[in-house]
Image (cartoon, rainbow, N blue to C red; front, side, top):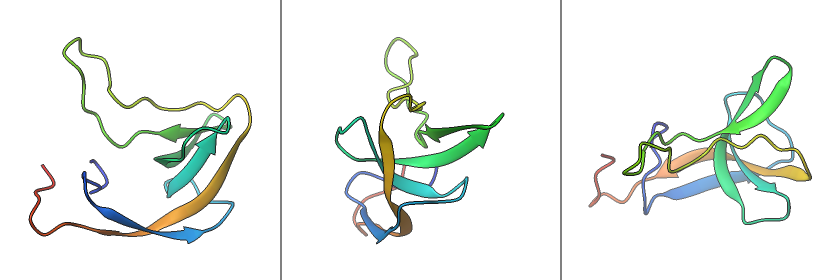
Length: 90
């Protein structure tokens, strides 16, 4: 949401296996389903930041940052977001 990606949006993704910090990437972690996150690097460590700060009824983030410890890879970079004109971003 903080990067303008809302439910129903289409992502235009360029197949690429590397990215720069700050890029929105499509990544697969531990062979699971792919996820769209912001590639970040802090203190020499790379992680995937959720761009949605929405919290549940207990105040916990619904979408967590991912600190890959096992196998993971970048499968693409988001080049553009196409919004459904009938839906609001907020």
